[in-house]
Length: 174
Image 1 (tube, rainbow, N blue to C red):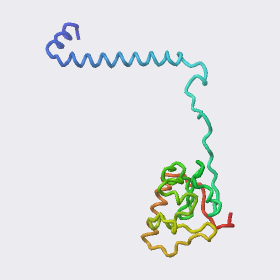
Image 2: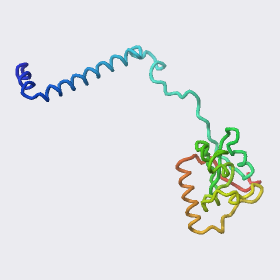
Image 3: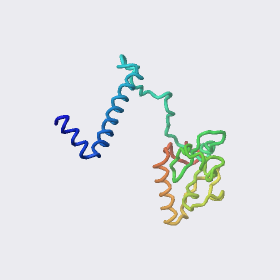
Image 4: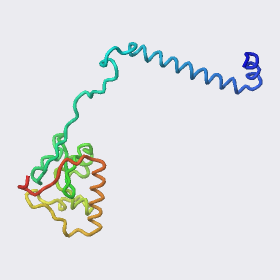
């Protein structure tokens, strides 16, 4: 294509001028960004330390699977900014990331550091849904099918959202 043909095409179809401008701008910004990024990095890296550093600033906290009793679970209520754990149907979940919900001032704060199975099954956040920590685990034998299904739904929800960090066992079994 000659320069004359290009000029005629641009003159006959003004939209081509707009398209040529857009293409020119995109190409110039592409070349500008690649040259500035290599300058900001100081050129080509000469060692692995100068390239992308994948190491985290600090090692993430390790999770150790444990057996918890109602008594050993109780301190994990989130008081003083500590870790928050709760149990549903024998599974212990770390719900610390949900501190606004499960912390001391949260809507479900009474479940923190406790077995929340009955409360979750019955959709009740009342204190009488909680078994005293010095008593045997609630066997949940009087729950209806719907309540058991509801509790299992909460277990699924928590399993997808929070880390399972252990299992709830009877006092003295740890």
